[in-house]
Length: 388
Image (tube, rainbow, N blue to C red; front, side, top):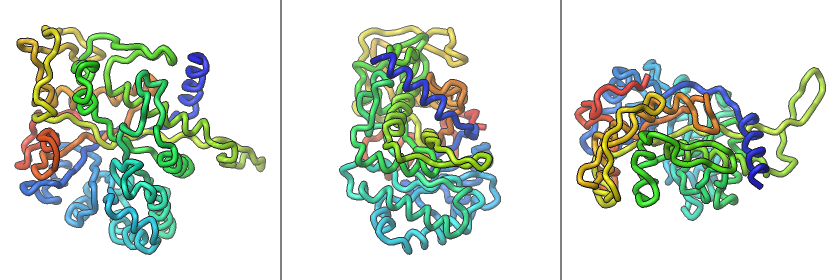
């Protein structure tokens, strides 16, 4: 069984190789009453060399400010608009006409919904809304420049340890989405948040594993033979494998046909690549502020592939959401995604850091309001990160 799994993973790696833009973007959330204007925010992106933005819903001021700025955009369709867009093509046509056509030169992705779960009201409408948006793009002859997708979180997969065992737990929801993405050669957008994963299971997940600072291999996937030294890689590869299982198990009639020297032959579509549409670490807050550790650890000065490994604990107590940990996570994430994961070694991963600002009106735990790379007065919280 392990040999069969390993062969399946190897086949998928060979099938799924994609050349991707080496690009780090930043998510621009706007749930705050003290945030700079869209124009000033765009200037801030430009000043710090941030070449890609994720905007969760259209904002005319920001869209106009992006014209000529040289910044690529991931533009969201709000969850509450999906059902109407799915059942009425003219609504999708109007949305594209208003929010895409005037700005087509810098829009890279249209994201139909964010973190929708199978039990959510819009779930059954996501694929249809994606198709209607694509139809609207087609009618404007701009489909080759803009990819339509949706953003999911990692709660949609189960059996993620080890990564080779991962699969989607609700194929009736995810299957049509992945089929749409595969046929249209669009990526699957995934929000990967190691902080949340760690805080949900601190007894079994080490903080250094979540921060990219573990000094050695933490576990080996016996099925694939791949070694894992950080949580981001483990989550990413679990998603990668889950996608592979959907594509590999697709019915035989789900093939595309291509013409080569006048001969017609069938060839399976490449699986959709994964783009990280959110990943970040809060500077304060948390589900209990402090996590008690069984033993303290002194700082190590050796390195893990250019990243500092080890960490410092005081009196056996470690606080997860701190400015120091957030800086460590963002710094290491930016370096790491240029190298790929154990299953995608050498492939740079397009990644959007979460988020540009602390957002004081976001609901939930305090940590939800503390993910910003910048304060609302536009000051960098962690110095200048090497985003370029």
